[in-house]
Image 1 (cartoon, rainbow, N blue to C red):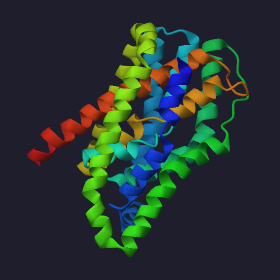
Image 2 (image 1 turned 90 degrees about the vertical axis):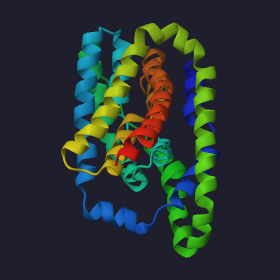
Image 3 (image 1 turned 90 degrees about the horizontal axis):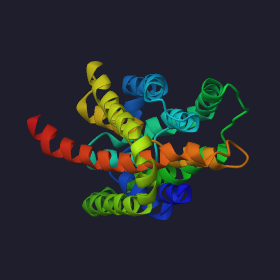
Image 4 (image 1 turned 135 degrees about the vertical axis):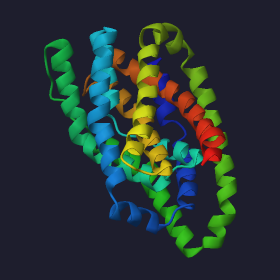
Length: 291
């Protein structure tokens, strides 16, 4: 059950590398320079991820009266950085891909401190005890190897061969769409037993937290005067969590060694793919024509 969730979140890494390479072909180095020169979207996105979402999640798991292991799993999920597929969702939604990549990269580094803090705090709160939970550097490096490095290679290719990059943009977008549909279908099939067993207990909370994450990521930036494309990017960056990281942390014998803690991220990964796909449709079919 949990192993299936882990397979979904870590599966097809080569395909995702190709997708990230393709996304890089639509970007320029100036896109990242622009973000660093005007860091307000990054600051707002980090505040949403590191402060607002964990507080909202804490309130939700307290009100929901979930089992302690499930509550800890939800809190770990709230603290986890954006997943490698968040850039794919941003691209398909017409958002600022460079911003999503930047946020995910910074959050992945910060997670080495924030995830252990929230993990130990949650164990103390829900179990009355704490453990020396740490985050393996290799787990953070995986994100950079799968997402950042291929994207940067794509940016380099575009700088040298802009004509080739333009010709590949449409095929890459089609490939990204097909990849997303395949992931959603595979997730549904592989997680079906998890949905049937844990859906009534955890599914509602996971869905509610995901919808809140999308809303916070989109509307809070707009309140601070951030443009819509960047608000879309922030929403995807903080709502498509790195569920695989949480699952690994939960089931690893050298870390938490508790399979029940892996149930929330396994279900959330499934929910996030579905709501993310719906958000893509809403952004493209409803919001954009109104601009």
